[in-house]
Length: 335
Image (tube, rainbow, N blue to C red; front, side, top):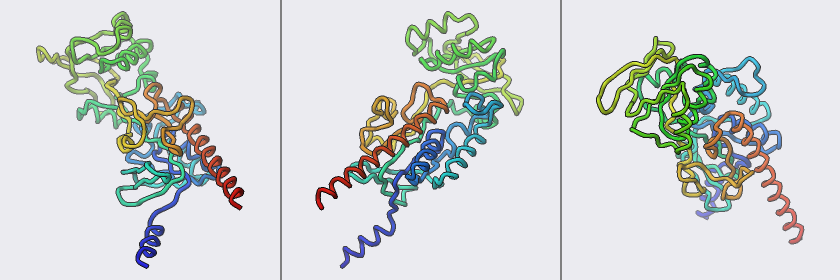
């Protein structure tokens, strides 16, 4: 009798969900739009940063369909409204624990609420690494000249002087990209050499309008209270400080995928990105799919994230259809 009561209590407290979407950037909301239209009744948890990285981007001009551009926060509101219009259940909160070890995909919200899911779409994205300077964070939040994506924001600094921090392949690639738009790019490299591959380092070294300052770190991002006007840097060997005029400050010291809670169940690469089956959104766990920057360390664009969100929803829909077909066949055989 006690076991029956316990079972009833568990069924009353555990929510059953057909499709759970974790994350609310372009990937998550696009997955939600497609899943809703396929009658999968998706539940989407927004996570710790509702709207994802685009909420820190002041202007988005490279997403198709916005000829006059749009701010990142506005774009995320429009995507959310589109998802809810089709029936997505958008909720506050974040997933703090998962268990993908059995046939039922279990997740916990805010360490309390337990949900059992037929399918899970992971759209948790990645977070850009920043230096952590107070002045850097100030102008990042103001949208006044600090960025972690040259491809996203370099356009706004055409014919201007900018500073970029970093020494790896990504930093070299972004510095080279900026050199095509800006009159001068000053590259701050913390050590006396690049971490980038030889070919990438040589490409930067041989670009005339890129100045490389080795053994150099950032002391402060300078500005007028609204926008960036320069950078105070220092030589970590001599401790000499000096100022560099600039209207843009780009940080290219890497990204960290938001995938820690999945590491015990999903295959991750050496830097933590989820490994998907090539050409699909499938992970190593049946019924669990990935979209956006949680699996993409190459492109990291809103439009590519949205595309993989579509893929994840379609893959989840086909997975459920196959499961239902198998169930009907087994039931028919049994009868």
